Length: 192
Image (tube, rainbow, N blue to C red; front, side):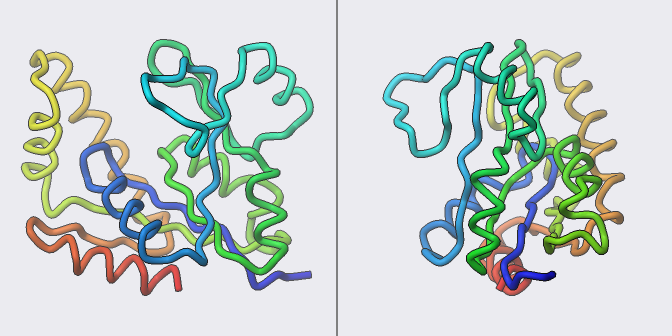
């Protein structure tokens, strides 16, 4: 049985512009739903509950045991982040579109989830945001914060392995320098 709602995943290497695209989608499309992540990391100064469910390590582990996550990952420094099924499935069943930014790890686990595999009960659309070229991405990564050569090399290696995933997504959209509006319009077209 199929629902007209769906889950859209936005994937792409760090620095490619996913957060700007998401911000624009949130502002321009109240009909789209952006689920909150559960996280074990500490709440930052001035952070409300609009983006995250802040939980303890024990709660997170409990939810894992109860299979409440569509996917989860452990990020640098050991904080865990997870996508809660309760934030996604009921919304899809109401016929709405859920938009979620995920890393490559998240993409891999979601597309293999029984709910979203081909022939599964729910529709999945995956959109990969590509940089115009590698140099552009490296400039963006370096522009965010100064870093040691080893750290930069590590990020570039990680970026290259992420880009290898692009062909296995449904759609690839190139975010060209100075063409953010066009990129956002392309993403909107694919989602809507």
